[in-house]
Image 1 (tube, rainbow, N blue to C red):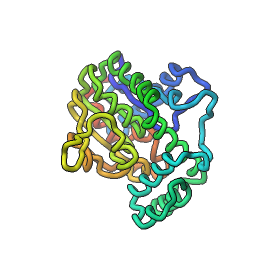
Image 2 (tube, rainbow, N blue to C red; image 1 turned 45 degrees about the horizontal axis):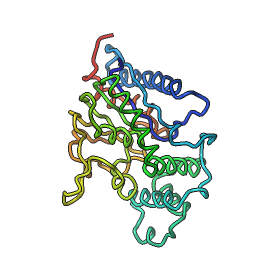
Image 3 (cartoon, rainbow, N blue to C red; image 1 turned 30 degrees about the vertical axis):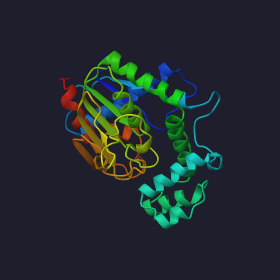
Amino acid sequence: MAQVVAVHGIWNHQPHRKPARAAADLGAQWEQKLGAGYLDAGLGHLRVPDIAAAYYAHLLRDEGEQAGGLDPEGLTSAEQRLLVEWARAHGMPEDVAQGLPTAIFEPPLSWVLRNTGGMGPRTAGLAARALREVRTYLGQPARREAAQDVVRGLLAAHAPSVAVGHSLGSVVLYESLWRRPYPEVELLVTLGSPLALPGGVFDQLDHGIQQDSPEMRGARPPGVRRWVNLAEAGDLIAVPRPLSSRFDGVHTDEVVHMAPVDCHTMGMYLSCGMVAAAIAPYVAAPV
């Protein structure tokens, strides 16, 4: 039984692998990365825990749809509105946002890149793919349910001490944890999470939002004893910050500085000593 269940984020579709094979490969890769994190944290004397990966990317794709970027011009108006909300979270002035037509891609993306240092030549296509995956999950109930079924199945099968969600995977995991029954989880770790994104993600969550509170806040899922959230300083997906500004019950909410280029992958986060140090006490065992 794996001690850790981990849920991938955007850009993880593996069209030439069966879902079970893709999940096994991701789990093995993440265990190696977490091993590097243990070394970075000075915890090389401890055994790296087994990781069961929840793979759901295939559920958000149509048959025959390929991995990689998308033509930004092919996005729907709803997907492009999500882009505007994301740019707002990065500080795009309201007068700029108000001046944009309903369906538009380049101006808000260019504003974010210009004001954050950019992400390279493939940015437009990859950003479009990310937007498509997020909107498919949030906007199509059957696929949303299927993705959560994958996660809840692993939680029930492994009864892990630790559950880790990265990027969109933090959204899938958060919603899955609200839908009991499942064994208690000692530690929830969210990495590079867009859970707090207003108008795009936060308002679309189907569980855990206190509708009757004055500020409409989110809450720690039931059965989760401790919640740690970490975001790399250059991670453009993890906005707005801090996550605890919108969610109650986040015990640790930190920004880490480690990856000026590769700043939004599960592997990058798991290889960080801060992530390893957060996980280790819940799964600690000598080598």
